Length: 389
Image 1: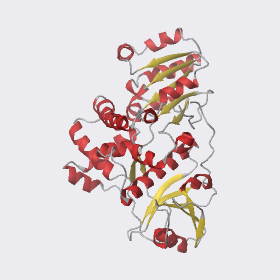
Image 2 (image 1 turned 180 degrees about the vertical axis):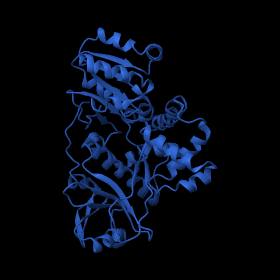
Image 3 (image 1 turned 60 degrees about the horizontal axis):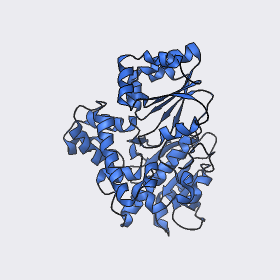
């Protein structure tokens, strides 16, 4: 397997959040390889049932634990266990490693009780830095980068992704009763995939699906809470131009997004699709690496009512604001830089970058045109400390 970039600490109890299939269980099995732990897997039906009927059984299990750590895998299935974990942390100083693929049920179940007692880490599909020599851009754009994919053939990759989407619907949505009727949610999921990376028009989506606006917003929140996507807000920086304020939404993996649309088995052939998937992937990479660095940047986007758009706005304390455009072209022209050049004319003191597939860096009228590989070092999102396998 591949070394991960999330830097978990053994000094304190922690949550490890991540969508299903990102490698949480494997990571912790390696993390605790050299010491005894009490491992509780709530995906095992018998274990879940026993603790569901008697949550205090966890305390009795801790009485006979082999070391100082307890791992509870997929803790969102029994949020009541957080109360017991809280008590054991206070009473006996036991340390808990709690994995979860849904923050929604934990919010309802009292995860706030551990807010001051447990660190929070996030795990994502593999980054290009984690993949190293195994990374292939076009393969990643087509299939995504969930760890399981790297042991499968192309045919099996398609089957895996189709199964992944089905499992997500069954286990995270239907089984956990996050929606009352899974049929409209399945239709919504395809619309969300098609609208990936675009400004969300809640009213239009509600009209297209013949559901109310509030339900559409709830559905997007479910995707975020189950870690299958995230909102990218409009920038809060004031400009003289009228700005769109609605958020964008990105699904957490390119391959899963294409699987929802039913096209993961098809190669990316058109320039238009390549441009959209390349932008999606690069936004994901920056989002992931920024999270591993404990959110160095506040991420947002800019879109004016006149149509001027900047893919990412990155803001960090005491640093210049970075405006970043993402283009899949191997040869940029002035038209590719129109948005950056327009903003730069009004606000020359910021930094303007364009990530693309050109081979060599260059500067055009104050805009830094960079091969995408160099963008991460320019942003300080490179050479993160490697974690456990």
